[in-house]
Amino acid sequence: RPLAPLVLAEKAGDWFHIPPAVRRVGSPFMSLTASVREEQREKIPAVTHIDGSARLQTVLSEDEEDWEEELESKSGMGDGRKGKREKGVGAFSAYRKVLLAFERLTKVPVLLNTSLNVGGEPIVETPEDALTSFLGQQA
Image (cartoon, rainbow, N blue to C red):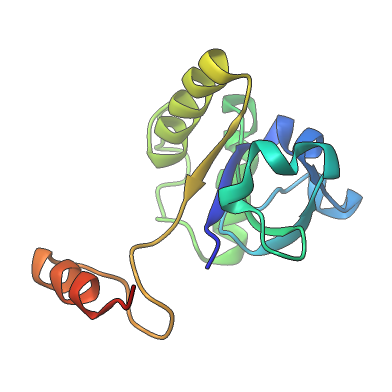
């Protein structure tokens, strides 16, 4: 079962075929399936499905954080802190820093991202859940 790519939003089009309507808002919640560009597939095989697609999660630039905040407030998916968020703070900013560092080292602005769970099972929340999930896997 392939895992999801986490990619810098401004580089996503270099690695994936992104529909024009999606380019502005990206895919911050792994809600977009896109084709991995043929010339990039061998560089990111762990996130490429057998059909060449990937369930994409994009990370916005700091300049786009205001757009992210607006999107969250309109969708009801935000944390209600509109206007209180500091620039460069939060999960997406931390992801962004890691992605930028990884890109500097490898020239690849894509990392593997996933939730820790097995198909059909809820997300692992405790060490006991993790052990149960691990022991329940078949080789």
